[in-house]
Image (cartoon, rainbow, N blue to C red; front, side, top):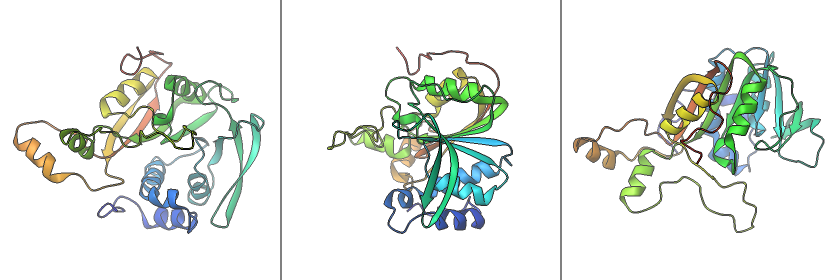
Length: 262
């Protein structure tokens, strides 16, 4: 666990989130700090209107209906066998709620939503899983967001202190690039971003805002980074997770930014 992991999270957010996580839900427990910070970052925007969460996490929408009850929440659904538009009952830790849901392949299928129909979009730990065309998803996010609408996005930072340390020790810097023994591959990360590449991609998609890093999963690799700083290397943004709060400023500027496309 990261030291002082909740120093930037209110007690209310922490309590509500914990109440939405099943006791035997290992995934959400491991990622609890990230979910808490994501909720905190969103709440600090004082959200109103309609919000779309891409890659429904269950604990985020269930937490939001308690933390921001006036917010209208829509979600996406991984089950492509369902109708493109349907009502989805989300359940976790004896809590449940019904949400408007959309079953689409985020890299290939347009969201069945009108243009400029949402005030906020949450895209948390989704971008790194895109296999072929992440800008398709971001183009759709741009389309369905109102002018000035806000995208809140999180994704692992390939250039974290631990990533740099791994490279210096002769290992790959990636967070989760392993293949699945079962052959079901959508869980693995297909591309991991740095502040530089994420800023370029979001700018190309018509967004401007803040991008920063935080240590969500592990404490920073202090000793190695200290040595590099003492050697004169200028190192910044070394947290293991990237956070972005970006406003839609206009249409897509570059459908295929060179930083991630050839």
